[in-house]
Amino acid sequence: MDIFGVLTLVGGLALFLYGMNVMGDSLVMLSGGKLERILERLTKNRFMAFLLGALVTGVIQSSSATTVMVVGFVNSGIMKLTQAVGVIMGANVGTTVTSWILSLAGINSENFLLQMLKPSSFSPILAAIGIICIMTGKTGSRKKMVGSILLGFAILMFGMDTMSSAVTPLQNDPAFTNMFLAFSNPILGMIIGAVFTAIIQSSSASVGILQALCISGLVPYGTAIPIIMGQNIGTCVTALLSSIGANKNAKRAAFIHLYFNLIGTIIFMIIFYTINSFVHFEFLSDYASAAGIAVIHSLFNIGASILLFPFANVLVKLATLTIRDRGAIEERRSDMPAVLQALDERFLDKPSFAMQLSRDAVIEMASHSKEAIVLSMDVLKDYSDKKVEKVIELEQLVDKFEDTIGTYLVKLAPKDLSRDDSHLLSILLHSINDFERISDHAINIAESAKQLHSKGLSLSSQGKKELDSLGVAIHDIMDLATTAFENNDVEEASQVEPLEEVIDDLVMEMKQRHVDRLRKGICSLEVGLVLEDILTNYERVSDHCSNIAVTIIEIQSDAADMHQYLNSKVKGSDPVFREEYLHLKQVYSLPQKEA
Image (cartoon, rainbow, N blue to C red; front, side):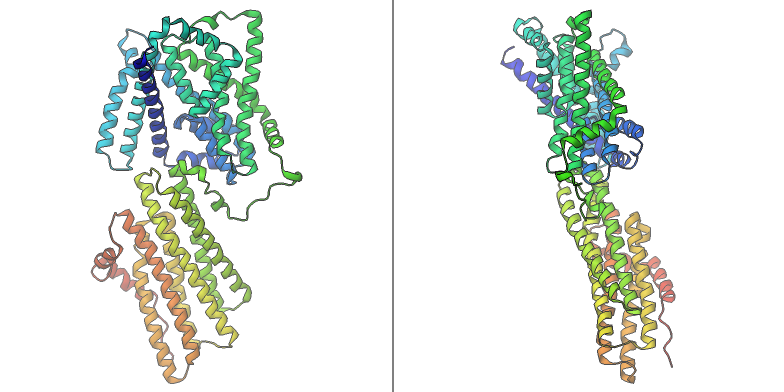
């Protein structure tokens, strides 16, 4: 092979790996995090976990990616170690789907229909459709993602054909054929397969490259089998690297993957070559085909799963013995809430799923903010030091949510996000600040209640009634904002702003009424100052609820400016808003003044 042949081979390999990467990433994006959600929620039954592991891996075309997700699930506490075993076994079976798709490249027939099944025949059509979808689709749209999948597959197959064409002239090269005969040594073949797969970190790609060589008639089965065994071991490197810095159970999940493949390979090799020493399989000297590679790959992974499935708990114990607890003390769980623990950096390579995890965390953050406000309003009516401490505790928890989620979203922002995920990222980044500020106002309200209690001050009976009426409106606007956020509901979000306007009116009216009571000597100036602080905080809470709602409306409708939206759509000029505002003004009116 001359220098141009080497360049062609390297170019074909580059196109193959790039096409596989583009296709896999686009498939993951198109799933929108749904596949990961399925894995997360439906793995309590080990057999179901096995099927789901096979399904997800078959779709995203990478057992390494699935296993890395499992390591992340275990590390964040989403999945137990015993659940992970089934998924890992299923992932090994699911990865064989790729080899069967690639085996179509080896079809040789004069029949037109069979010829059309050959990827080199239909790949140009897929490439044409794919490029049209990419050029006409909007950034992050499903159409563009489908186009990337089709184009990625076409590039992959073109790269495979290029590699096969580049090595075909070597069929009659004694040096090259002797090299492959040397790899027929089981130990050497396994090492070559393991090292190469570890370098490119994809058993699917490694098997595909082997299939490309087989199409050219260069690799005998005696060489292919040990290399395939080694590929199954090499693919474990990705999960092992991913487990660095993770907790002990996550490391154990990575070792389960290693032990499953290692034990399966050792058992297969011992049985196969022991039988071969007596029977002498003649097919080992035959040249392997792409379909033959797919068959061997599938038989090994399915056979290993059947053999080791009943011993799943043994694999768990073996991994536990490898990664021991220091001094036989169980690793302590973090005091961080589960939804924050779930924000594992390993999921950043699966942006859609990472976005959904972030959304779950902000929903819980919103719940804590709402709880803090409701409790602070309760402290005004029925003071308790324990309640004040609880409000402080909730505010500190919300601060932790904002710091953790904000940091995670900043890392997620540069990733390749779909259009929907880009919208969701914007909503989350805007909303976490508002939810955090709401909890700060809860602290302020609780401190005002503490000030009244410590000084023996009290609002007038009329003032208490008015504050209770305003409190109902604050409670309802919090309900509306948090529900609209949780459901990403534009219609529900549109109901927040009219109520916020009503709350502003109620606050102004309460301040005026209090001035009237001061003039009549019913309330003191000191109480009035505290009431002023309470009303200001109530009003600020409703403003933050408005910010959350308007952000949802603005981003979902691709509006450019919040102030423009408020001025042109909401404030005064919109008849629907005006009608809702007048209705709510009657619903949330203050009680009549006492004579």
